[in-house]
Image 1 (spheres, rainbow, N blue to C red):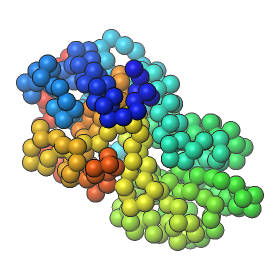
Image 2: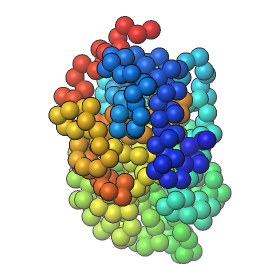
Image 3: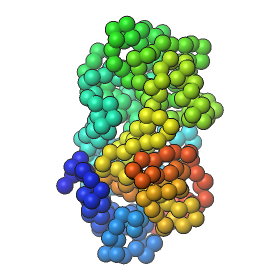
Image 4: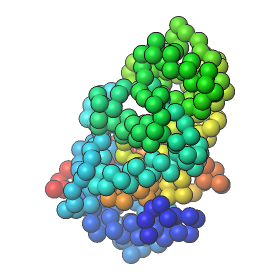
Length: 322
């Protein structure tokens, strides 16, 4: 079974346990982490018992199944310190995940013009976000689909799309969208604007609710959405309102207790643990620094970045692993 064939919770759980055993045997860094916790893989019979790999390890280790090559390397765009690296064994898996995650929310990519208000792919080839937007631009097969950060060009293209009554989606980094509207207002009633987060040190961080109100007023559209992903994951989650995100069938968000990292549940508030089955060859089980709440229907809400306290010492845990 491949991740794309996951249809329900039962098949998800079965495949997740299968991947856990695969990584326990074939992923030396993940196995070392499990052994440091005295995990017996034969006792892991449900997904809540799976050890979640602290995301910090992606900053200093090549997290990949033993003795396989990689086709693509993505690096995080952190504003300081070491950056995460994600080694992609099969880039086609990322392509599939990008398209299917998009289509489950918006329908066919070819129905839209895709605009990226981000740096161009030619200048940011190691960014998983820019790669994702570039892939959607190519798949849309529309002449107006492109990266645009220049104000004059942005005005010209969006005016043409509005006049032609075209459906279009604008993916934008928060700071880049704010730069566009700093001294300008637009009338983009036909647009969907997907902010991908990240002031990247260019501006002060703004509460998401306030940011969306500012963007909605300045672009004159009530369709301000959000996308949640990270360098270390292959699958995207989308929010249409209130920062409540939904996930594809092969991705599940679990909750790690604030005070007990081994206490993991399917609903509640705490740190987000993520199972992304598309991460078949790197690590599907990620313990993040983000705080949120998971609801009974599997959707989740983001509250922001949590304390570093739960990660203290983790970067030393595998120091002696070759």
